Amino acid sequence: MRKPSEWSAGRILGGAFGLELPADFGGAAAPFFGPEAQYFLSARCALLALCAAHRPGTAWLPSYLCGSIREPFVRSRVPIRYYGLDESLRVSGTDWTQEIRAGDLVLVIHYFGFPNATFPFDGVLSRGALLVEDASQALFLPRQFRESVSILYSPRKFLGVPDGGVMLSDGGSRLAPDSLDEPPRSWWRSAVAMALKRREFDLTGRPNDWHKLFQRVEATFPVGPYRASDLSRMLISSADFDEIRKRRRANYARLLELLGQYALFPELAGDVVPLGFPVRVEPGIRNQVLWKLHHRRIYAPLHWPINGVVPESFHPSHGLASSCLTLICDQRCSLDDMDRQAGVFLAAAARRAAV
Image (cartoon, rainbow, N blue to C red; front, side, top):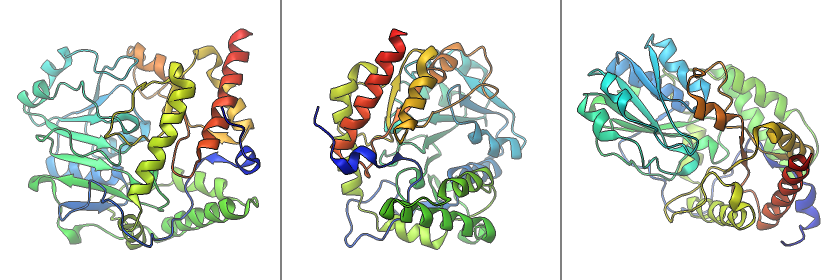
């Protein structure tokens, strides 16, 4: 393991992205580019539009998910049911597909940038359901099931834009271009201010209130018939996706070398561009390890707390939620950063495990 540079040893890893500058040249296009792409304020706004277009009888969601993804269905008064996953995020059985009714909506999530290869799409489609792919964590992943009605992306999880969710759909799920409203002005100004403040913090290192503003922006994120801002669309279209892909993969590969025994995904296939590096530790020490990382300015997130969101009967998902955290491997980071992060993690996990 290389000794980190003086700069990488102290700077923050993770957190919200600062506002991007347009790239001077175009790299490889993201999968969602094309005339069929529709740009919403967020992926949740896209899901709300799908509910309005199809009026599903029930929404079937995986038992491991971000609780906010339920909001479009709650607002649309669509009942929610869950299907189970094991602790490796594989679908744990197919009996649940027999309870699907024609017109139900079934959501499949591609976790952390990796394709969900175990999803029983044949059984879902044979019941007449609408299959929707959630690639919010998998910006570079093309549609995996040609029979799905839509695939959703969230560029703001991968680069510095204040808003944006992208939906690729078949003809029946597309909306008229003028059917979406502009982003709510007051909220959007706060979102842009947050991204600018985070950019200033990254450039100067001087503290400001970007994190407090980020929390307020996230807590009040509008879910409605809203389109992406023109600023976000311009920044997305000019991003250097070649560089993003290269750096994320290189950082993930370095963490695999150092922390492979903890990795939730121990292999990096050639078509995967990871969101982060999810690891598992003993549930009893996870929060202490997380605190140690945060204390060293490494802001590893939790994907996701599901207590009170998913029924407790889905034991494997609750087990994963209590033991998993996501280390940082995005394009802002260097290999030195990966070495530093791995060192902090290993010291914390070994020390806590020995207590």
